[in-house]
Length: 122
Image (cartoon, rainbow, N blue to C red; front, side):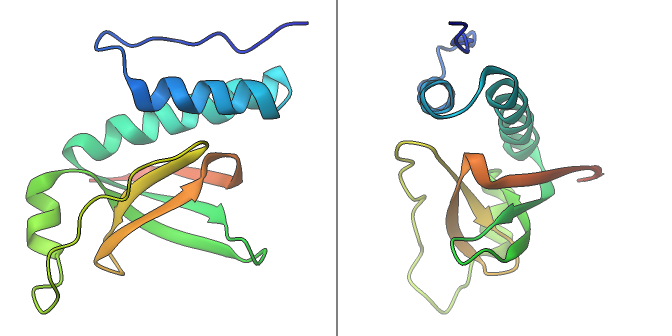
């Protein structure tokens, strides 16, 4: 049986390794590879900028999200009336991001990603 190989990054990215393991254990090889590729690209886009993506919420609704992991963007968009929030720790199969509309940290299960909008990258 073919398995999704763990694609260790140069810095041995623990988060992506956990995502690869989760997908390898829960999805067929082709689907797992496609989801992993999108999540890896999304993570890279969020390091210095922001991106738009769609995922399916637990209740079945699609959620349009605009997210980032860039500290300078987060500082500009954080809700100053609340205590500063911290990044939610990712657990098995989730990806955390700073939601620019909600102005707080959120996460979603990686296998619920519907679309990564490659035309909206800032």
